[in-house]
Image 1 (cartoon, rainbow, N blue to C red):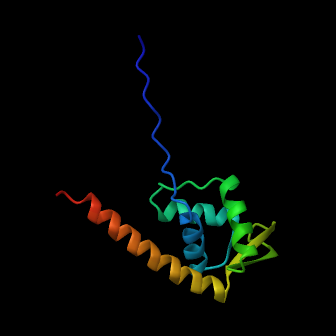
Image 2: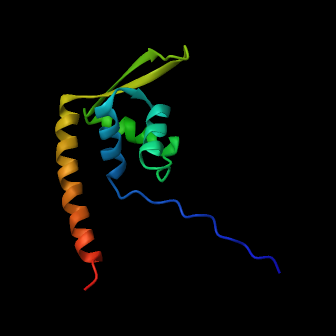
Length: 115
């Protein structure tokens, strides 16, 4: 009988967390979608592997909310790509979301502490 090993579980992002991570990455510098995906993977120690099917709808949503701005440009590889940057409203939203995340993570840590 063969023994099957389960594939490592992909961590699920809490609702709204992807938006926070995108805003934070764009605070560092404007970039295109694939670059964002790579940045999030690298900065998370390879934990978050954001698929394009999740990333692009989030980018469209953030752009519609006015938190990021997208503009077509030619990349360093001489390819046309949409480059996203953080707006002033996006910077304010990032501050709010970061404060909310800190409160949430502190509360979760309190619950996880041994009694």
